[in-house]
Image (tube, rainbow, N blue to C red; front, side, top):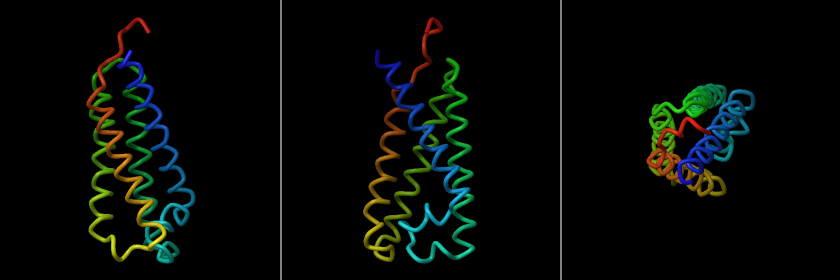
Length: 132
């Protein structure tokens, strides 16, 4: 059933977002080095990485909470996570030439991929039937 698969994929994406958020909060340099290179050591970059980690943690937790029930509010939570990823992709493209050569393609691919998956899954989400 497509709805069950969509919910399962949405949960997987949400758990991934929670994991990224926790990692960014605990080890911000690990998350930012591929994106900004040596600037990842700067305290202000670590601060921004942690704030982004909080964003991802909140979006992932909200999506998981919404997906736990049959409420239609899961769709906006997953879509908003996709929107955040799309913004990350756009700003990565805007700074592309200034980013580290080794990391920029991976970051661009991951942000575009995460946005596409989240937005695609959100579009296909419908509440699960109550008889799971």
